[in-house]
Length: 486
Image (cartoon, rainbow, N blue to C red):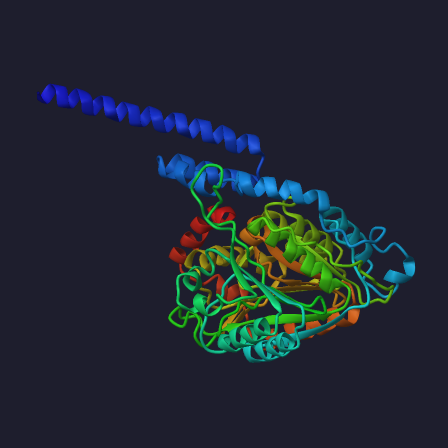
């Protein structure tokens, strides 16, 4: 009997070893053939080898940008009516770019060929800081709504200031205004399972889950492919976009030990507003199988210098589209590159672009929060600081809260603003929204807010940074190996 048990156990061990070897080889070949970025490929190969069976499971869940057969089919159908602002391509008239940064026209052309969305002039942009100011403006615009309110958020958490938005939406719905709310299934999971959802289950208000997680093969979607956008469009007259989740900072993640979240939103009027709405409608149609028209009317623009360009990005568009735009802008910088981001895990291409800019005399200034709500991201981010500082990049840490604003300003004349963090999750995986600002005055205004953040932050010293413990450096370098997957 003992001999039989020993034989069976030995056979089982052999099967497990050979089974693991077969899976590692199979999925390693898959990773190699996909030609992912080198860092991502190496990280996955390391996971597959070091974590028997678990690594394969992780790859099946997180390894590829698979959104599900059903969703992909809907996307393919909608592409026949894809959002094109009904114009003859991007602005090519020299007078349109006379007062813009020299890199603007080429950047606009790159984004146009990526998304089909041209830059549009004649916009007005105002920046709002702090939850109270954002909520005040948002509620006032909802109170004026006559036709529709479209809201798209990663996180919706009821309570505190957010009840004012709920009250405004209920009042709007009572007036006959159609309110469509699209919330990420994971980011807003607590809201979907709470009684707060019931308040919004009234006529004229529809709430749907974006990127729901399903486990059937034809519906499978990755847990970490999230809709990270924060956008509001009201009657195609005004739009909001930026970093602000629909939460009251005084009640949000109060036990995380990072302080209150600090955000900024842009309030936009003008021809770009229907473009934001068209993007919302596109994804609403995918999630619901509705057939809302993407554009309700032709978009009228003018050749004024107040040019903006909506730049949606995600796993269903060109790979690393927003990263390509950022790289082009950074390489075109002459005087300065100012960045604020809560999560900084840039990857090799963006890291090198920032280092090269600093070495050729461009003033590169990075602002990050001193504390973030992700243990792995914090240490992976720290693994980049020494190389940045050695190259001449100025790194500032903000300690008055979790600075959640995301913006890049080039030469105080060209800017990116929206939901994209400078980490590979935002740049490669999430559904994000960026507004590219070609208007010098608006870009300079945004740069002024970054100056204020920097004035309240502490500059990192290379000599002091080098004095951190060997254990800290070792752990940072370990997390750096897996940074392409974080």
